[in-house]
Length: 381
Image (cartoon, rainbow, N blue to C red):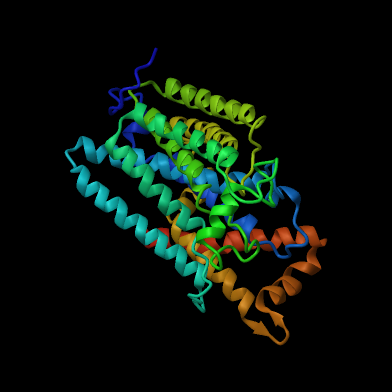
């Protein structure tokens, strides 16, 4: 049976370990961020195919796999980066300080996007996608630096159990029989205590990146860290890929089993959702790793790799561009509506025209990422 001991691969057979950069991770990150840009930027929100929308409450769609996949990738990348520094004699205290600084910067960038361009501090949304990534990065990074694999696995499971206990048994006013109802749940209650006036404008009374639901989101990141250990283990290429597939299948199965007691729900980031999404991410990445880094089929996925090398920059540019398209007016219409109605609406049915707009938005961002890649500009937050 393969050893779990993390160390550099000893044989020339280990193609991926021998490469200075794990290209499959860039490809998977790029495909994930491209998917995020597609689902976030349709031409019309009332004409979107169901898989490109979040599940209304319980359940999941393709769209619901995007954010947890990115958070899982953060964990994988953390293992590959931090482990090398620790093994080369890096000071854990200095690495922790680096983690705190980077997390704070990502959080501030997220706040910038929440407030752009008016920055209404009295009602600015405090939680958000980048803010959740920042918190998970700091907490998971601290756990990585001061525990071994077993400890990281215990924390991953522990956060899921703690979340389940809080959601099912923590007392709060007006609790309903269903602890995961939209109308009353512990996560919503805590958001109301600490985030009133600073939550997502579409919900107002709870936030999909709220406080309590960050616990299982940290586990999602930790599952990525555990997968990263598999990538560094002294196994053959076939063993590494097989174990990642098995790991993904195990997490997926656990997610489906836990779903019997705790529904898969992205808005609440339930424990079953965390397990299921980490399993899907691990399985998809194992396939990407086998195709790209082991068998060397890189040319046709190169655009995704380019996308993935500047993922945060692409995300920020997307948010700024989308906000400006909605704010800039040409007559009575927003620039977004003018572009959609002039260039895309005449080409197809509303659903297909809306999809074409989203695809064009993805291509626009790829053009920017490609220019940055050609010029050697890589934004590291």
